[in-house]
Image (cartoon, rainbow, N blue to C red):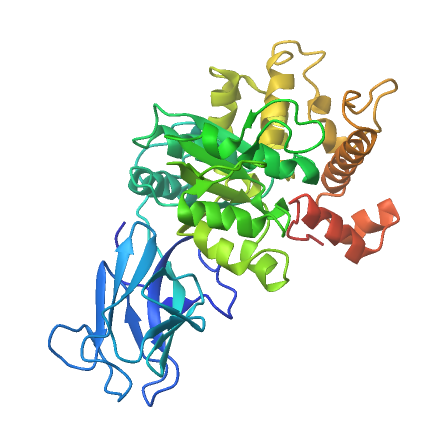
Length: 452
């Protein structure tokens, strides 16, 4: 990473998660109720606060502040406040403490002086690598080569990462690559898809449960946190995690311990690197009250935004050959290559993979290798006899909800492709209000830039 320093943006009270494609968090203590209100002190490995200049990094001349009042020590991704026997005490969010960890947005009181513990987003300038692939990721475009460089820099650490990107843009492949490039590569790589598990089972899947913890718990179950010990836990679709479970996950990540459902003994310790992914702007979700702000800050130590396929179409030939397992792009007709380059790819890399799989079997058969290989291109109705898959072993409601989601996603994919991403025409063709259509597209991470 190179380049001049970039101005920082305060996260609290401002939309910042996706202001930059690549960003990291830095933490500051900001004075609130003194004549120097607004003055900010960056937190490093150790910050000493007191009334005298000697031995202190932050000098606060106030009668309620002791000569050597407190220290703030960095421990991994957390900051520990330690009172040094001050006369008037140290308080965090109104509670007096001797030792305690700070959480994002916490109010730290040094005597009667107030400081806010604030994360700030720092944009990162990343020089692209010369390589066109890294692990499971492929691309020669500048954004992808910048992602390769950033992963190579961050992967060897234990820092938590937040991956932002549309559905199918490669967040899972990025998480696997981060794991493979890390010192934990020999450990487990565990995926927990927050959208794929029913709400009443999420807590059990994540934390595990003891036999008899609830009706149907006929045996002990080891959860994802425990199974990922020594490796990497990939929390996919984190924006779908229910609000009531978010504080439990936050507490587990901060304390590095958890309890299985029904566990009566001591907590289980775990050592796991966490990578989270969201198809939505997670900061916007916090502002809408759908995601906890403190969990957002805990997950987004580094934020990496993956581009959609339509924003890196120069990567398509390379991706086609990589997915086909050998040279395929140059074997395509000019019409076929034009279709690949002209398609909007609402399903991103995942949709491309499916198209390559179909094309790989017909590329050398002229009568089959027609423009219909991109089925979404002409938006044909579903062939007679073709049905969406149904998991008949699931409970009725789960199977029904899954079928509806599959139908909505497939319908929208075909609709947007058929109308060449013209939202107004798509809404007319579907008989939907345009706002409702936007809502559905956002639901499935398929929001596009409208073309007229």
